Image 1 (tube, one colour):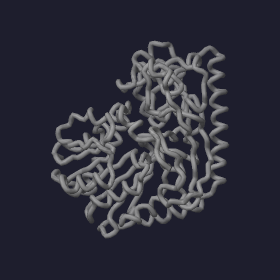
Image 2 (cartoon, one colour):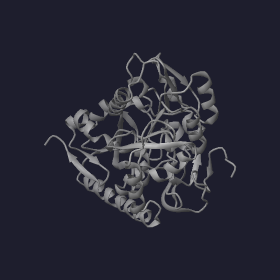
Image 3 (cartoon, rainbow, N blue to C red):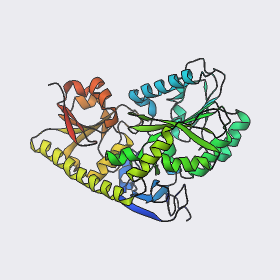
Amino acid sequence: MKRNSFYRKINKCRICLNSNLFEYLDLGSQPLANSFLNKSEIKNEKKFPLKMNLCKKCGLSQLSISINPENIFNEYDYLSSSSKALVNHYNQLTLFLSQKYKLQSSELILDIGCNDGILLNQYNRKFNNLLGVEPSSASKFIKNKNIKVINKFFNYKLSNLIKQKYGIPKIITITNVFAHIDDIKNFVRGLSNISNSETIIIIEFPYLIDMIKKNYYDLIYHEHLSYLSLKPLKYLFSLYDLNIFDYKKLNIGASGPSLRIFVSKKYSKYKISKKIDKQIIYENKWGISKLSKYNNFKKNVNDHKIIFNKLIDNLINKNYNVGCFSAPAKGNTFLNFIKIKSKKIKYVSENNNQKIGKFTPGSHYRIITDEEFVKKNIDYAILLSWNYKKFFIKNSLFSKIGKGFIIPFPKPIIFKLNE
């Protein structure tokens, strides 16, 4: 189907090309989750269907539409480095890679979807052959002179340019990006093209089974086109002479708990862990291709909406002031789905200067600084970046003066402060 100026409908699985897709969740008509608004832009805001489909053949979950990426990434308010917890996470990753694979300072290290340079900035200063690919406006915030930047979308065509101009990378990192790719086969073909027997590809993404089991439906938004697990990915990589040779479950990631996979050429020296096939067996037993699993997820999502609104109503009825703490993209899926009446929420706090002064998409709550937020007499704050709750409970200004954080996932709870 021809793409219009905003999106195209997905009629077949982007991995196995199966055309029998089954809808299992409809989160309504929603705006782009990272499109924070100036007040004058609210009246012209656009919304798009946010529905989930299952491919029962390979087990891939994917959105029913694909937004034209130029409408998402041209003006992009998400700057990764505004999250100190995420900075720490990538610092640990680069230390691990440097030590585990004895990286040399002259070896080419490539980060695809490098945003504002958050991951590449964590490498020791001796590393002088760093390359970032970033299509969005976030790339203009990269100041590190050791980082060379390509302001384009990665694909097979660009992989040829990289190979000719820069050579073959030793390390390729793709964190919180892989789920964004529409033509995922072309993307993986490009990865294979710039890999050799020494190359290690590290990919992080939210794990589908965790999302379903723990009811993390806020991970669903228009940037995230695919919802991934090992079974369909093993098949995908095999088409392009690549293997998943290891994986690790992580409690942290840009969008929440995630899976980190390690990929290499089939003829590489990296031994394939037995964990891979064991986990795929588990995925099959769990029901990765069974529609009943996903229909149960739909019920849990709708139940969560009712429970959360009751919790908020109870606080409002007791005359407490409620706000939102942090303004991640996934928080907008959550706020637009649960539909808390606008008068019930008093402001959203944020430390990303690109978002401060704007309004949240769809729900239209005003975003203010953390410092302003603590002056607004907010009693309870919905922690939209719930995946960093330990960090915010320990380090945020609000944790010193507020009554409590409302943690929305996996089950709504109030974490009392200062008691």
